[in-house]
Length: 206
Image (tube, rainbow, N blue to C red; front, side):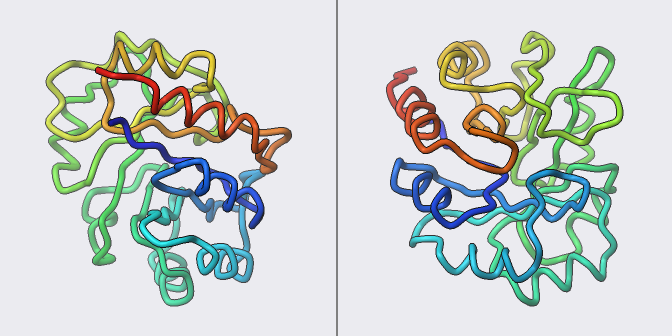
């Protein structure tokens, strides 16, 4: 069964809707330039509202060590997700499982990325859009994903209820990650879109 992460949660009602619809993981964005950014007090409140057995993922983009440690001291994150140019040594120093996001375009060697971040829990593959670090709603050429990646693939970038089934059948990722594809507006989730997305993923038998 393909796992499901709903990213960019900013409101408690969105968190509850995603969890009750069957999301495996929820993402909180600790990147001030993102429209889905949460403050530390917001994040604390949201994290403590997460029901049992749902993973809380904290997303960072080129953060300082001190900032990650500050967040971890206050917010009970299960997994860290790094979306910038963080080196493997940076990602692994916090004593938490981590995901490394890779912005995919022609010429990016994903096998080499997997080798470089060999201790990551997985590679999160997103679309390369100049000047942004993800959350764009843009998809990428799925044919660029090699079959022999040694790490679990979390597929992201432009997914929604209308295309996620095809993405799963073609790529067979460990998990899918969605943010803008289930929103009413940036940072505000649409409960019906969330439910439709999750239902679509769970209906697929590989």
